[in-house]
Length: 97
Image (cartoon, rainbow, N blue to C red; front, side):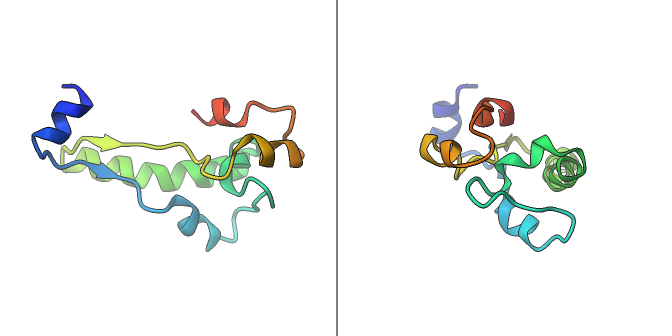
């Protein structure tokens, strides 16, 4: 089913809540001051915490057989911010996808 058809039919789908808000309360991660949680994928320990939070949503979707929209963690990763960060030579958005 195409996304537009899905929406038109008024189907219910699960989407993640604010991943950033959940992670910022965790002492297990450290955020980049420009890109926030978009860079967690580059540090194995931080990536595991990111995966744990995403996995909770995936598990709920599977348990209740719900379609799910999963998003990247790149809401702050625009070109200007990437260039200001220590990750300027990384493909931050692509790597998160």
